[in-house]
Image (tube, rainbow, N blue to C red):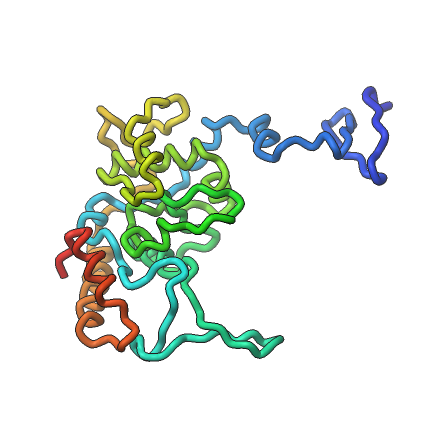
Length: 271
């Protein structure tokens, strides 16, 4: 079929536009989010998240809000019971650098709080609900660099890995996750850098695309995919409490005792 809308290729490239072989010049390529919105509405996206997300039970959050208070994004790793730096050696250059935290212990916390093991969650990703909103990853994320919030299980949700991209770049999606966390756990991040956003979450009134199973004012519900507090989860939490208690007493010189105590005090955690 002859193209009804012929266009001159740029650098020899033409892009298939639809099944009728319409093409569009590469210089008219739309913003990726706009292209997605033409195919999926916000309600469609939230429906996918509602049906697939895995949430920590509020009872689990109350039992142990933060699972690894000694860790935070970019904090340094130590081995031999916190007595020696843990190094990463580049195989090509031979240069060694001090290894730092990415998302390892946030992932561990969420996995345990959901009653899972690492091998039981292939192609699932840990998503922090509260952080500094920056789709280009150019701003330091002070929220997850704070030990109070990095491994906080009310600040995380488990999503199929492809869906995590929505939470990284779509503001409305991030806001509705925060609204859900507020009404599910009775908690909203109080870090100074997100104070304005916390106010918007508290005043949220746009329920058009908000999932039906999620809690909101006047509706106390558990989201689909909530992992009920269980003996397995309690046992994992008890092991973490015992490990923290032991480390405060006997871990090596690099263990951040003062910072850990501040986290425990902030959350009123009794070991």
